[in-house]
Image (cartoon, rainbow over all chains, first blue to last red; front, side, top):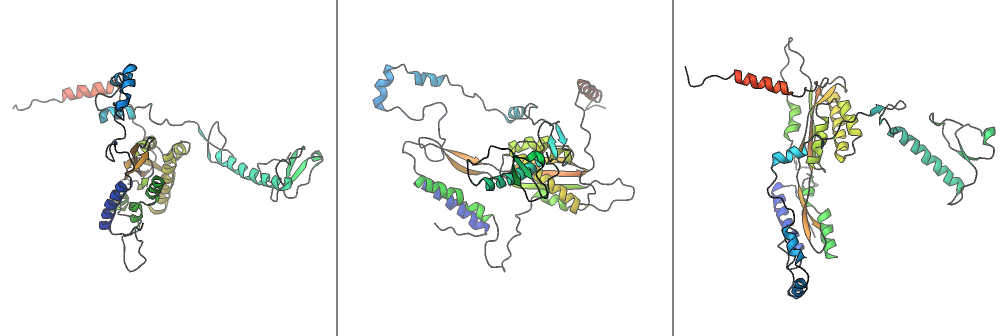
Length: 183
Length: 203
């Protein structure tokens, strides 16, 4: 399928028309009983298909519930005017409420909700945690190799203290971030 | 497989999208129209130049018009966000939009930041916080009709809706909100109306 591209606006209308015809011709894949293409998919209150003659016996044995129940289905009587629609759509309960619980994070100065962690600080911690986990992965070498001792993360120029006797040590090759307090 | 091929064709081959992209010819001698399409009325509003103010006049506050076209969102849904930030200062608007979960909130936030940047760079605004939103509107973009496949070979026609978003920033603090109309105000207006009646077609 070769489509000729052209910036001229005259050909654009022609191409759109040809495209529409192509679409319509390419999608005849509907059974013959359906309405012509672009018609509504389902009628409002009637069944989508007519019952075949063979099923008439079946229908007469059971109560004609299908046809009766159709007449009781709810349907709008009149078109809702745009004024009525606007009253419903613009009612104060549907408008977005102004949030009054926005604060400034004391650490980084970005905005945060009062009861939620600051997004920027959390992203910062998440990035560092990911790098630490990569180091842990390199040390362990594979799945199911987690040791049974605690882990300690040490940064540049830090020595394991006396308290970190039997713990596994993870080295990170950077300065200790200010928010990651030692011990 | 035929249906999936047709669906594939429809999804990526949309001639209207290709044609709208402008110059695709390799020849550089042909001067096509500007890379942006025809400028809309809102974009042209930034170009008006007022005559210089007289010494005694109060300073005219700077006005910045900005918009974004063909956002993939519904203009009815976008209207709620536009209504939220109408009349707010730009900082408050950005704060509200940051913590709103709607898809349009992110888009409007980008538009506001762009407009703020434009204001400081091009429109001689001194403080970027000293702006408020005078107008914020949405408009309907171009819709495209597509086929939505249902079960049993049924189909529906869905419309893919796009919208435009327009914003006007004005320098200065936001105006105080109007006090709501009370019954007393309405009564006063009614009495005023009665009093201002005259006799017509008489001497």
